[in-house]
Image (cartoon, rainbow, N blue to C red; front, side):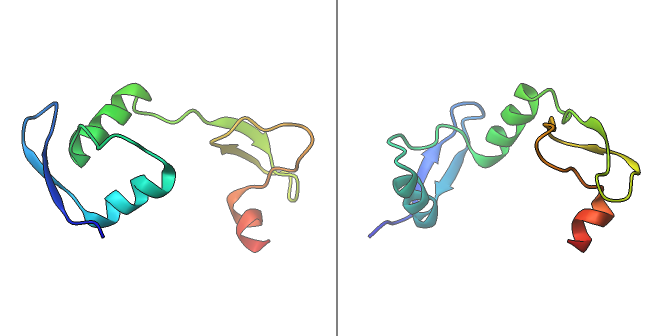
Length: 89
């Protein structure tokens, strides 16, 4: 149903392949526009927009009590676990 397409990146002007699998994914998600940037320029743009670093939040593990950091802002209504306790669950 879908065939690979060659597109030109808006930023670097290099050609890139919009694969049939990517086209199917876009259709499933309801995206109407084709990507305007190649994968490397999309990745670089995401890095720039996110500041390059992920914000971490200090928490105490609900299971073992060790101090740790998590990449989300925890709420008081759910337990938060350190890496070891989370993997053991």
